Length: 177
Image (cartoon, rainbow, N blue to C red):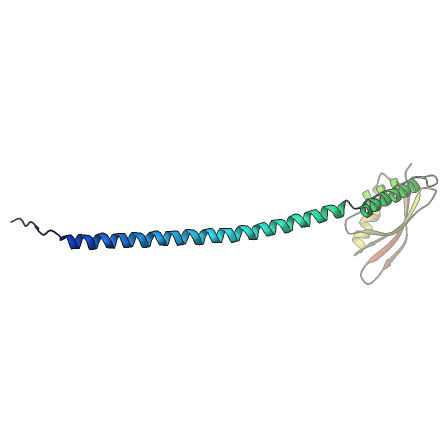
């Protein structure tokens, strides 16, 4: 048998349900409004903090820029360039030889692990060079490299000294003409 529900809610029940729906909708709308206001307030604070950071950075860049273009720095650069020009002219004016070329040749024949502690250029195209290394193998490789070089001839070893931490060799080499 079929049952049919013939119950009809009263007008009072309908009004209660309608009032509950209206109250819950109103509370939901107020909740969304509060969330949006909190979000806008947070974004406003974040934007002001970022604007302050941007202004600080802009001020720093401006001060650095003005420091770079100051008169003292320009005078220092001009003075350094003038001194470098004088040094280059003095190197090229040395009697019977070009020290710059000799140093470039010396640098191109250096072995890894060996460094020059002193050198002197003589007017007869000879270099007196003192080289230092951590072991005898590096010193011997450097001497062999000078002897096999296309830039040097008459390689002679003057003195080899062993210290606590390094080995020093005095060499005399002549530049090929």
